[in-house]
Amino acid sequence: MTARLCLHVYATSKNVMNNEYTTPEQCSGDNTSDRPAQPDSSPATRTIHEFQYKLICEYFSHMERQGPGSPEATLRALSFIDNLTDQSRIADIGCGTGGQTMVLAQHAPGEITGLDLFPDFIAIFNRNAKRSGLQERVTGTVGSMDNLPFRQEELDLIWSEGAIYNIGFERGINEWRNYLKTGGYIAVSESVWLTDERPAEIHKFWMELYPEIDTISTKVAQIQKAGYLPVTTFILPENCWTEHYHDRQVTVQEIFLKQYAGNKTVEEFIAFQRHEAAMYRKYKAYYGYAFFIAKKITL
Ligand code: SAH
Image (tube, rainbow, N blue to C red):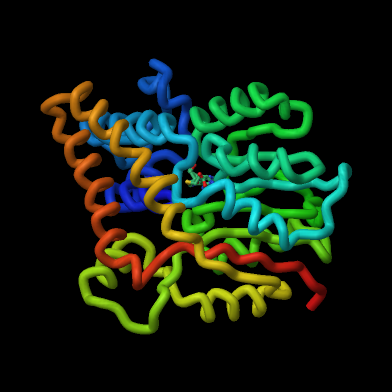
């Protein structure tokens, strides 16, 4: 998922997420052999993919967040949203283990549904909600962002940090709009180019991972075209990538390399995560994540 960046980047590069497991079972369970095989996957490739899938789940389950972000950035985005009451219905799409959802819930009224494709993340999400005493109004559910379990115009707020790339930004903002009430808000973070031009190495890196990355002005134009009033946009500060994302992977990487010593898949996976962090250090002047906040208007 690099999710935000990494989960996404690795999964995309390995083709394990969307093609192999559109509705994955628990990744830490021992029931993987019961999972229906994709018609075109041989037992050998299935085993490799299953291991990659379990690996990704396990790795990111150790982290509070599965992509760049911070409690401060979440609260800054929330500060632009003024329509919430105890009756509000909020969805956090691609919520992961719920790092940002719990921050949201502690500072906003209403009922929140967190939705994610990975059952293990949702299990952790629901444990976190309970631990924070939020289980009465915060519920995690397994599902896919391209088939949301909400009614038309049911929601007052759609939240999504570092996850909309899974169906693509433009498709996401257009489809999700149907679930929002008029006057409801969308708050999403998305990878963006910070300059009009950039070195070939970083351009190529992103084109292979997420070719829909674009400039902020292009994304804002897409928001407007989709039937929203763009309210504000801000770039996530560097510590959302370093302190809250890359730095927290260092210990997990060391543990994994010891635990799976000699395992090529694990070594390749960790090498990819490290490469992604190195690319950010080298090219952070050219790309980042931006938060987009917009309000649904009638067209
Ligand atoms: N919002 C969290 C997680 C971001 S990582 C955070 O900011 O920390 C992206 C998340 O999208 C992952 O948890 C991944 O499991 C989820 N995801 C990927 N494809 C999805 C889909 N089709 N539907 C719902 N969630 C999906």
